[in-house]
Image (cartoon, rainbow, N blue to C red; front, side, top):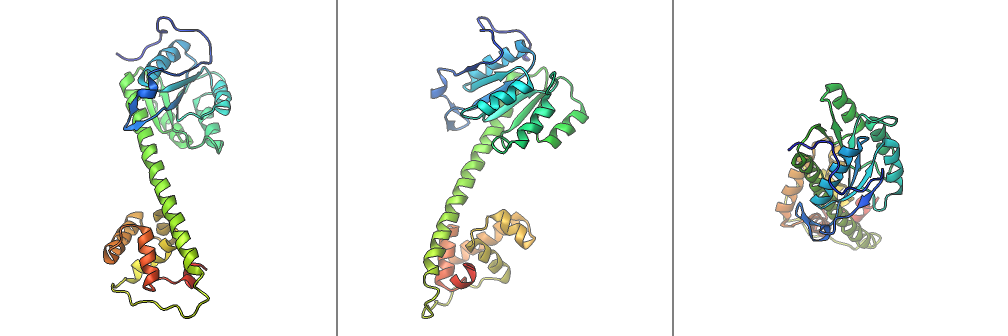
Length: 267
C-alpha cells in the first residue's frame, strides 16, 4: 500500500527525533553487516512519522527534521554523519532545492547521496534537482519497497566504490614504497637491467610509465587523451605479457627488466 499521511499508533511527538532499532545490530543489509544512518526531511509531520517508523523497522538508524533549516542544523551536529538523505522538495523557508545546494557546498557533506520526494513529477523540477546534484527522485504517493530499493541500490554502489578506492590507494602506497626503495640505487651507475622477455608497445609503455608514478586509470586516461576502457585494456595486456597479477607486481617486473628506470620515474 502506498505510504500515506497519518502517524503510527503509539508515536511520540516532537519535531526532532533520533531512534535506533534494537534489531539493527543483527541485520545484514545489502550483503554488508552494519548500521546505516538516514536523515528524513518533510514538513508533513504525519508523513514524516510514518516514514521514520518504516525506515527504522527496515534496520536503519533514523534522524528526522521538519524543515530544510532544521535539517542543516541536524546535519552539522550529526555524529556520525548521515549515509543518505531523503527529503521533500516543497517546504516553507528553505526548500529541498536550496537545502541540496547548501549540502553540496559543504565539503564534509557534499558526497552524501540525496533522494527527493515530490508530489508532482514536473520535468523542470527534475532538471533543477539533477543540476543541483540530486541522486534520485521518488514521486508521492509511493510504495515503501520502492523507497527501500532506491536507498539500497545507492548505498550498495557507494560501499563497492569505497572498497575499490581503498584498494587502489593501497596499490599506490605499495608502488610508491617500491619506487622509493629503487630510487636509492639511482646514484649507483653499476645497476644493470636484464633484457625484458616481452615486447611492450609504445602505447603500453606510455601507460606503464604513468602506472609506475601511481596514476589511477582515470588520471592515465586524462593524461593520454584516451578512454578509461582503453587504459584498462592496455594494463590487462601488460599484466598478461609479464605474467603479473596486479600493478605492484607489474611495476616491480618493469623495474627489474629496465622497462622503467628510477631516474625517469622518480623525477
